[in-house]
Image 1 (cartoon, rainbow, N blue to C red):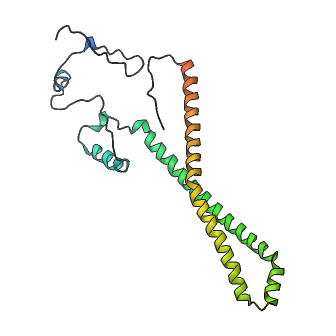
Image 2: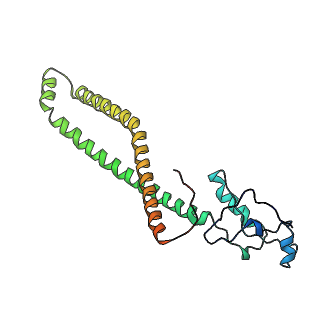
Image 3: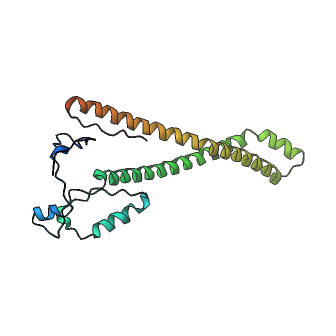
Length: 204
């Protein structure tokens, strides 16, 4: 207890926060229990748990819920509920992506078969000349099959090389669009809400 000089002011956590360092009473951790008549039954305002490994999140959350601290007085909030909603959104996006991949693959297969048949039809004169020269049908079909496989291999290599860049560009575009929408919403809210609170800068 005493008068002291504030060397580092603590910024308000939220709008309307009346916290002032000069009004602080320094005690040990057990004093709040005594003042509230809850000795041996600690009271906490909030606790923050940061999980380093995303895959361990559910296990850490389950371990926290096992702690005997009187959960009727507390709420367990996972990042304001954003984690669950984000996970659901990503799962929905994964299902949509798989469905689109299946549809595109099926449509591509049908289109390729039709192109191959059209290609064969346009080469009837070539087939006739080769058969007139004594080539067997089996050998002619093998020649066309080898040509189709070569074209397919070249297309596969080109698609595998280009897909990482295309997917990265698409993801960057979607992320930028989301960020721009969030900034526009923040600017719209700033005109209607006056507060000293400055939101932390988020990076993608």
